[in-house]
Amino acid sequence: AQTVTQSQPEMSVQEAETVTLSCTYDTSESDYYLFWYKQPPSRQMILVIRQEAYKQQNATENRFSVNFQKAAKSFSLKISDSQLGDAAMYFCAYLYSGGGADGLTFGKGTHLIIQP
Amino acid sequence: ETGVTQTPRHLVMGMTNKKSLKCEQHLGHNAMYWYKQSAKKPLELMFVYSLEERVENNSVPSRFSPECPNSSHLFLHLHTLQPEDSALYLCASSQETDQPQHFGDGTRLSIL
Image (cartoon, rainbow over all chains, first blue to last red; front, side, top):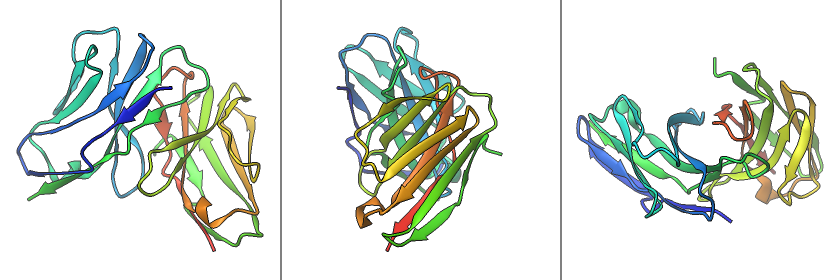
């Protein structure tokens, strides 16, 4: 079974600075997707960025980028120019690309605090 | 507008009550999901529906009963719940089961 591990329960960063959130995962599959979701106090789980395992190029979405290391099974999220609105719980998630019944496997989350 | 709407937003019920959670998606997706989010634990998948057919029941207790009458609506019927069932219940949908999921705001459930 696949597992997702986020080793940082909480991270703090100064506004406008850069922060990196860590995620490692374990799977025996070769084709899968990885995601970062953001959950602010409003509770809605918002998709931040996605990465297809077959793509070597790291995904980027504006201030958000990932460092995907497939061999190391590592998928970190870098947030540049941090803003107050980035404060939230961040969840790393895995999805087998063959579809089916497994749904998303989530890590426990990292609470990101933005210091003004 | 989130695309996935959940009602009610909050629910408090006794252990002997029967209630239902509702989820509606306006995205034209074919797959819908129920997740449970408890404090200090990762989100747990409860049920998956694809084209209105249940694909998986992740060993969820029978006091939780899902219903998917059509591809846009998903219900979670609750009866004789336990205090440990207090949690945030999140609904999600995706185009297919191998596509990114879009989540609703969740229902915060408290069992007295």
